[in-house]
Length: 173
Image (cartoon, rainbow, N blue to C red; front, side, top):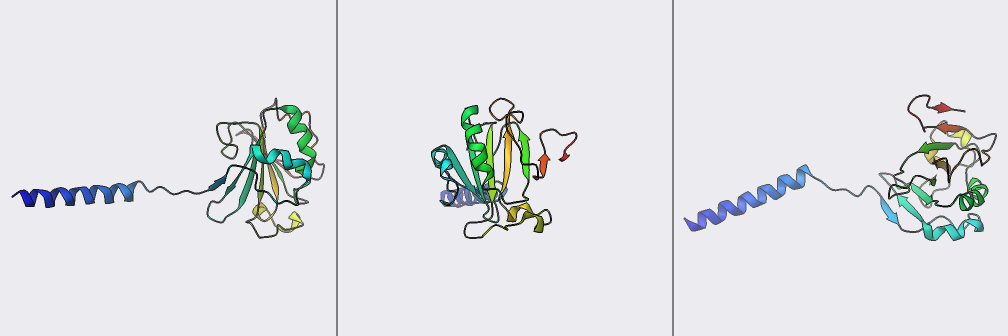
């Protein structure tokens, strides 16, 4: 009788673990590097930002997302012209607001530079991608109105600006 109880208990534990493992799978969609892992060929003026940045790789296709949070308006404004230099010609600038997944920790001011997977060259002319921006280097600007203030920076005239800051009126300029 005791042996039967042990066998039943073991079976119950195995079933519970199997069901819990099936019902609650945990997948790491992104790998995160706690510093900016962008190419050395990017402007030298971005080097001081590496230690405060983070690079995410993923989710399914291993695209790279270089996120830099800013807590100082002057630092952001000094970096902005150099950040624009890495953008593919014709690639968009996406505007968002609020806490950003890319920046982490509920931060709401900064930039995320999205690039193709490591080792894959971005398309030089984004006009050839037909809206598939992942094959280019494009910029996502997380606007808070204080540190990242659109009234204080210049957006390139030729840039497609995709404004996703507000639910109503999402669109392009």
